[in-house]
Image (cartoon, rainbow, N blue to C red; front, side, top):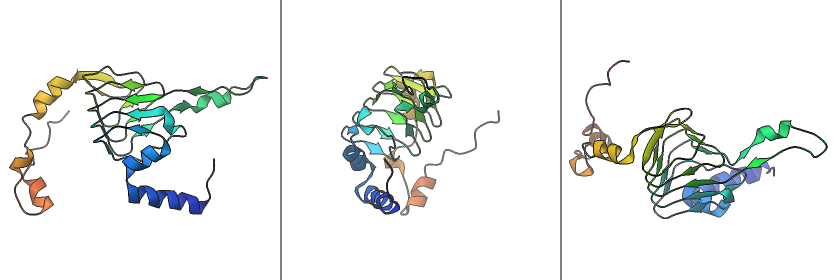
Amino acid sequence: MRYSPIMRIYKKVKRELIGNERWAREQGVSVGSGCRILSNIVTSEPWLVSVGHRTTISTGVLLITHDGAGWLYRDERGRRHYVNRISIGSEVFIGAQSVILPGVRIGDRVVVGAGSVVTRSVPEGHVVAGNPARVIMSYDDLMTKIASWPADAERQGASRREQIDSLLQGDFRPEI
C-alpha cells in the first residue's frame, strides 16, 4: 500500500510523538512489558513479529518477515512467496544495525552483536554475532564479564558528559 506524502509525514510525526514501542503495538507487533525499541520496526507484516519482556531492539535493526526473491520466479501459477514469523524472547538485546530474517526465533536471555545477520534460530542463553551470526559465548559468561563494568552508583559529575566521562574504560583496544 502506498501512502501519500502527507500521510507518510503524519505517520512519522505520530511515531515520534508516541514512541517506537507504542507505534509497534499499534501496527500489530506483539510487544511485552519493559521493552526499549530504538528502531522503527518496518515490516510489511508487523503482526508476524513478537517481542518478549525487557527486550531492547537497538537502532537500525531490520526485522524482515518475507523474502522478496520469490517475485523473480514466474510461471502459470504466478510468483512465489516466502513469509514467516519472527519471535524475539524476553531479556534480549539486539545490537545496532542487525538483521533478523524470516522464520527466526530468538530465545530468552540472548544478545545479538551489532551488525549481525541472524539467519537461523538462536536458542536461549547465548551470545551471537557476525554474518551469518554464530554463537560466540554463553549469556552467563557475558553477564560475568559485564559484572566488572562500572555501575550507575559510580557515575560522578553534574552533567551527562561528566558522568559518562567518569565511566571511561581507559586505553583503546589492542591492534589486530
